[in-house]
Length: 388
Image (cartoon, rainbow, N blue to C red):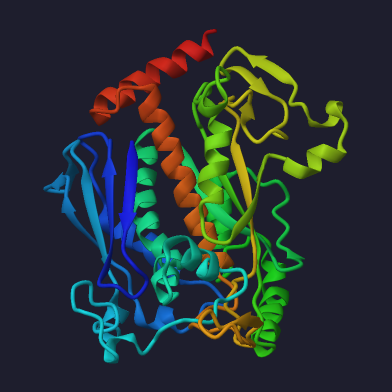
């Protein structure tokens, strides 16, 4: 399974094509739209979300609600394009009127300057329109389809916020997906600990007043993942490495942890290695899950736990120093419409890319042509591992 996305932040639409989704999956469009809506929500979001009301349109690969096994084409329209139609017109020639929103003062921490240098763009809008996190909307739509497949395979997955700025949201190593989902739906921060909602609201409000931005940490938990996905044979077949790469590919992510992650570096081996157990009803298992469900680049059947550190958004309303790329004068950076924090949508996006990578691993391991055949193969595979 693989996918490709196209589209710009203020362009007509975002487009995604997924290849390799099994035939026979009943697609719940409402479920996709619910994830898109969740990505647009969360405390600390900006005014763009009041304009966009993302809904998915399926334009290929699905008939009468079921996947065909052929490539699936998805579209999410950009409603704000109505205000940018001349500036972002894909085919009209360049004129003084449609280049009024040029960007020539790159924002520190964004792709603006290096992207312009690499691709030879002297209007940095050509860079920021694609490097914008707006693109993640279509990745969430793709991830939602992957989540629906995982659900058909009895694999549960959820992403939530673990920290905002310096305030930890106290996840307490919770590995129960159902309990996590119940807790995070009770607030607009997708955090487990309800007592931390007001302190985090206060932090975001003060940061907004200061014209600044916040990052944080998100956490994804997946349960009932079959053991043996990935491989120890070669570096590029290790599933934990692929997961880390996919998560790092999300806008503004600067660090990835699996299991105890960096805390394990300060621990003794006896405190980190998950001791092996065997039960007649379940086969082999582990007494703990410090390694986050991975050993030797492979899933080991324990809950998969992945955390991602998101830097603060680089667009600040109190702009930082930059340099005009035409005049080389020191000036304040351009200011684009932005959020105080996008940590809540980041939890949805990271959940989505982890779901995508899980589906890739499953369809690489088993025959992914047909849902019923895939379900049968995984069921037999689980029995084989249980009786090892």
